[in-house]
Length: 135
Image 1: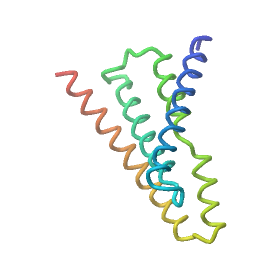
Image 2 (image 1 turned 60 degrees about the horizontal axis):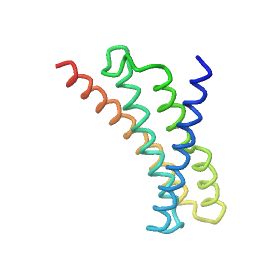
Image 3 (image 1 turned 90 degrees about the vertical axis):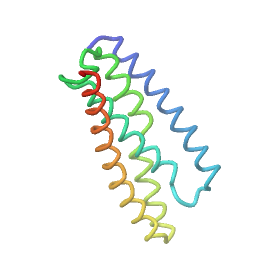
Image 4 (image 1 turned 60 degrees about the vertical axis):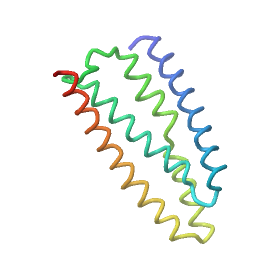
């Protein structure tokens, strides 16, 4: 790992964080703040992107020759800055503490199921693209 890897991760983290702020604000403005829909959507998208890119960058993948810096930029930088498990935890507890235990449980369930589904779709899409690029 070179010093440039840290710079790429920092740049990716900044871009991911700004995207998280913007998308979170857009969703909040559009749908309100009652349910943490923005964080849910962000974590679903992040689950898809990290598995999609990682699948493309596997040894047999289309982007297998992608430099370490590009992988670190996307997976650690952008996805690390974009997704937010800590916000998920805070918002879940806030719902529960305000008496919205059912909403908190729904949020946890949706987060786990939809993020795993998005991760599975990311792998499937990456594998399909890898196969297309080999043909």
